[in-house]
Amino acid sequence: MVKNVVIVGTGDFARVAHVYLSRDTDWNIAAFAVHERYVTEPTFRGLPLVKLETLVETHPPCDYELLVAIGFSGVNAARAAVFKEVRASGYQCVTYVNSRVCQWGEVSLGQNVFIFENNVLQPFVTIGDNVIIWSGNHIGHDATVGDHCFIASHAVISGNVKIGPRCFIGVNATIRDGVDIAEECVIGAGALVLANTEPRQVLKGIPAELSKVPSNRLRGM
Image (cartoon, rainbow, N blue to C red):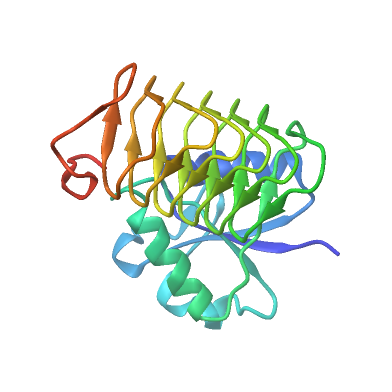
């Protein structure tokens, strides 16, 4: 049965997700949706652009599923808020795994997960809800990625790593096996993390050093 999907968002990730879903699934992408204050045109990428506030009337949960395609703004807070909003309205959210992902089974995936090409998911990996995994990452056996995380490209997440909710893992970051990353942490591009973290820490450099600025005070996130 073909899924009817509405993409929530009109930013870069939403645009990119539309291309991937159009080319790599048989889903019917029916519309885009955003909050009313962001509706500036009647269409987006050739599809209707509808108000999220009235989506249950125009595209009801019994007939449509959603993809919340919002980036990592506010250390993923914006995407988490909209995901919770639409789930409370009764919607199911689709999970997309690119056809060029390498996985061997025994993998658990939540709702609204989007996994790009050339990722490696080893056995016994658990991915929570509302997680974005960009292209080319290694996620080792028995690793856990919590809800509302964003993993940029070419990160190495070793076996038995636990990543808490709302974390951001930067390009080319490496996390040693068995390390626990606490909630709302930002792991900078190229960082090497060798030990457990505390909540809302920002780690950068090789080896990673602790920033004095907590993640909830970062600008541009």
